[in-house]
Image 1 (cartoon, rainbow, N blue to C red):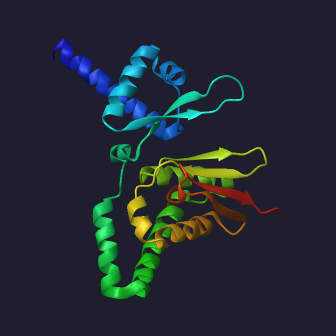
Image 2 (cartoon, helix red, strand yellow):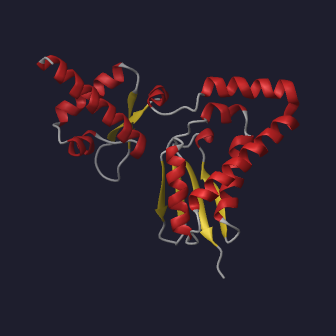
Length: 219
């Protein structure tokens, strides 16, 4: 392999790494990106400018308490092609066809069947786990396998956040809100009646992530 080809492969790998990091963490400045990849600010800027020319990233200004605003680099919707999309075109087409063939009532019945199958799979994955944190971490595991890039964070008030950084069924959910409604019910079912769960951020409502806040009922 030639030196030029190796250089191109390294650049491609770095740019993919930047895309995945921005998806994971949201907007980041050049200094933070340089530190993460152990590259100079100039090198990172070259990668970012190349990604910007491809329409994959853009920059926004974030006000800071002191000093000038900071330029943050963020992904554009075009970057979603690097992440699982759940065969969105096919899914949307099938949803429209099911509505036409069976009506909304028939579609709801099909969603119920899907929900029950997912419930069985999730409960099997969670096993006999009773600790709510462990349950959520196992739930995040299976959601990540499905393409949701999920993680769990503990809050200072004792509540827990299930954070999903990507939605592989986003386009399908946009035309079938029952998918998201069923997911919330699904999480409540597999986590048990001793917790309260609510969606506190929603990608389809303009949020960067889908975030579910989970609180355990006090005895």
